Image 1 (spheres, rainbow, N blue to C red):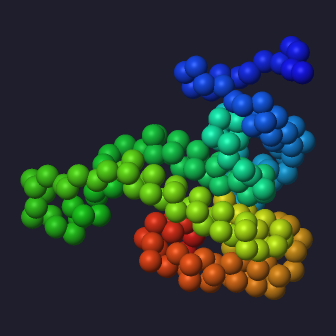
Image 2 (image 1 turned 135 degrees about the vertical axis):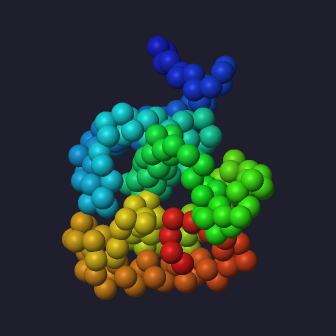
Length: 205
């Protein structure tokens, strides 16, 4: 019985299912209890802490769980990866100029009057998001909890993280971090190597 229960409308007339909303609220409880730790991890990776962006990220994760039914096994890794995406998107909005085409123009100064070819950034981002989701699903179904957590945190904080820094932040021996993440990355490359151009683009494979 859901007496007095309110559904949060996320887009249009859509509302979370009871099961997904329950999981999303569990995430919210976890977030409230672990906010300081998340800020510590983000700062350790070199990301400025912005309260508004942190809140936006929290809502994005809530949306993913409640509305899309995303299964999140590692809140920390998933949140940090989401925060990185929110932070980068915010920086892109603040940046000026057609930064995507500048390298091409510098290489061919004689062709400045030639229109640059169309680049469907939305299609590319969707392809990256799809392969990343498939990779994370593969990792979660293949490895132990420690390896999964380390890999997801590494992906979430990349490229501003190193094995040594992650080892220091978590208090886990460097060799354990290096071997766990290294084994996962090798396995991922074997499994998804034919789509490497889209493969977790924030990670140097």
